[in-house]
Image (cartoon, rainbow, N blue to C red; front, side, top):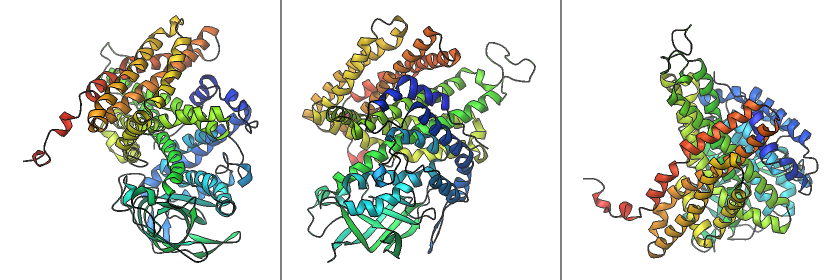
Length: 597
């Protein structure tokens, strides 16, 4: 059976040594309780829950899946009990406002716990995970009454939440949405329509489910400007208790490739009672609160699958004996050497390691921005919000792409055994595949990054981050030990602005140039962003080695992995530059009827 061990040493390295979270928390109002000892204790307890309760259920969820009946959806064996332990432990309320029953700890700490929970069992983690977005949306846009009624129950974990966007005829293009909201005399609305692909839409783990639903009012304008947002509970609240069943039901479960332990539902709204959140026809604006939260959460999924694949394939590579090292036997007393001696196996393992550890640094770095957006001074908040707007599509798309790559490497390390279900590697590949699709496909994230975030701001959004990298390179310009990292990073940082200008100039003549360059541009951006974070990690490791502090072997391994990233993975930017600047003609010249003869 595959295993998961929380990477507490590496998590501590990023949090405490690289990003100096203790100073970060000390600088934010209301975060006084997030002391190093408190944070360490919380993370250690989260690790125990993830390792002992959730990880053993990962294969169970995949094998059993969810079961639909007219009475509702039954989750896999052990899922409900695990959720009750999760609620009893106070985990749902960790990073939410004390006014609504939360513990008032920083959002970034919640994201760290989400890594532990998600890596141990991604399908299970989606049940409480969707609730976080619903809570953030209600906290930002809900009325006082809505917060008192719904937010308090979501914060405790007594109820869970969903986001209901997609319909059979519209996924990305929400302007085509048809779900209707008819006003009632009491100020509520009758919601009618069908939503598909609704994660955690129906289950037996909580007493009530709060659906956050996009729908269209009778007099709404066409397109995205005519969409409103509604709360539609499974059971209508009656005081502090739940009352009558609402007109919302799960019509069926999707039969899907992976994440079998999570109920992916077709949800039917039959004149269900709903309540407007925020202004009429501004539903998409309000929903973006939810979607941005979900996109950072999905970026974390890329890290989760990379970490899980790395841990299990590393253990296998140390144990599996096949052939001899090309430089002679490393294990002469046994019939063959462990496969970790072979360069190509090491390349796969190091790729996983570099993406997992680099991805962790990126997730925690964006988590710092989330904290600042919520808690910092207006000036810091604006700066953090700008950085987060740029980094969110990069983190979501890049980390899920390389997370899937890492999951495939994990299967490959196992060889034929990776293709067999008992080892869990093929499940990891299947589970990870969805991450590049939901919450906006890689292609949509790429258009958002290059089109909306970069070119539509005349490059200002990008300049905000390239300035951060430029200042870092300047401060390290005299650091000879870091030269092998800083010099290529500085060169790429300048090139990033130059190729953006080139694509932008082409796009002024032909807008297809944006679409043609976008995915390559995003992946390039991801490699450069991770290079910045790997340089920072290498800097910290060098400082510790020079000072003779801590575990020298850990820091040496960190430097070696940084070199691997810069020498083996970062050069992928060269081909990405060639392809993104090759123009749109090689994509658009072929007539539609000539694609197949």
